[in-house]
Length: 83
Image 1: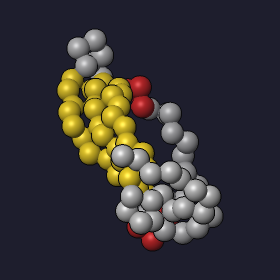
Image 2: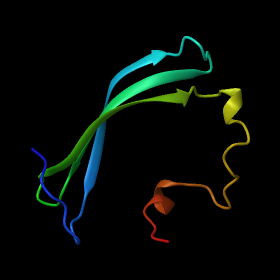
Image 3: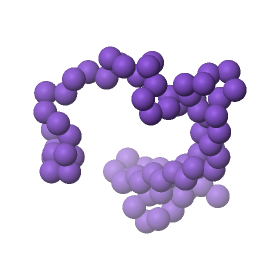
Image 4: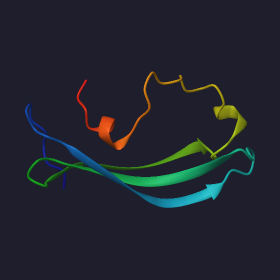
């Protein structure tokens, strides 16, 4: 049973991969199914869902030039910085 969410709650989400498979019609992509749940600060489940989506495979041509060149690289040190 899901609990309500209130203004000021802190929410945490986690996902687990349930299934992954090759796409029959798109050899450059795969199909992934995941289950996600969201907890509030007290560990109560406030949202849960399952979804299936298409993702490009690593190195797929379709990914070239799709992501802007960053002005600075992402590292473990910069990942925790607040904007």
